[in-house]
Length: 452
Image 1 (cartoon, rainbow, N blue to C red):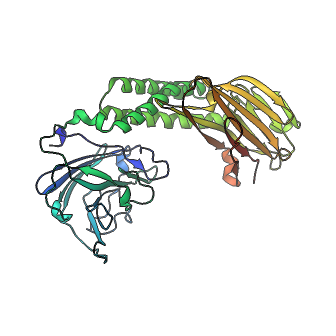
Image 2 (image 1 turned 30 degrees about the horizontal axis):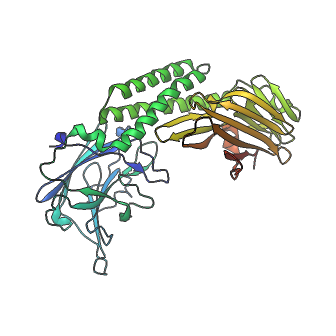
Image 3 (image 1 turned 135 degrees about the vertical axis):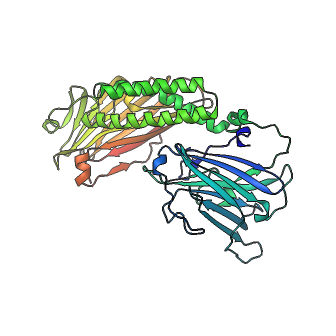
């Protein structure tokens, strides 16, 4: 039966970002006169670390550290009555019913639902039979709706991830934010070929992100080539493989496979980029504590030095490539570079400051301004203004952006800071975010302090 029906996915994390989680859960729902039938496929890149310990019904699965799938029903759509069923990968059941409909809370309930589960190489799966009498409902009619949600607790080896089918802002029990299951007519023609359209938002958002990743993956690979040639070759190969997967696959499984390739590529590039930052974005800087106060050039860097700190800026990129604290005699930051996310009505593109190309440098008594272009963000001019403040204790940075095309554009900027591991292991560190400058143009501001 399940092979003939479309699947729904697009589970998001329950943080404020609501990103689509790396390991998606796919759901298919059918019904007859008596029951709901729910098929779940919980993908997990680290299937060998799936946790399933509890074997006793109604014992706390989460306290046992298990992977858990949960289904919530709000049969009245008011929140007065709430049903929650949960199970782990070996089929141990837990259920709960809240009923405030008559002004008195009643809990303590065991439903007559059943579940069968299986752990496989790609995660784990489950099939649930849930009788309408557990709601309690009569058989629904075509066009009826049921407020419901799917939630998941994943205990993989990297992190504990909490995801939801509905976009939840506070807790899984916030039934006012659940989505709706619409009961279709028996003669509805639905099949797996409809999955792309059914999951349109997920497909479009993830396809854009993966295409952007593949484009900049080759550029990042070239950046780290001098450091790790073999890693650069692997990254280039994965970038090409990702582009091929996106162009040759037009089904949901193809996109999910491309996402796995994308996560492998991001992890590889992240590790190599961190190592490059630690060794110097523009090569080594000789004797950083030998610089006199003021602004000078050395190799691939501009150096802003004060009695407290030395700040290196990569000449070709205009990005922070090292911060040294004279008072403790060590480097505290290896690099700090911005990530860009440009969104228009039709597209979303990701890039970062390490791809910026400096076209002009303006020198000031207390700092530098870099005028840059970014090859992945055509039409955009980026001005980065660095100033020494508080007698050189702080290096402030402001970004001013403008574009030639007159179209609605939103640019998001976030920063990745790589601390020197020696300093981080033995010292406290501090990064201070400053209020945005609200003068003409879209800007963002931040400050780096040598130490706290």
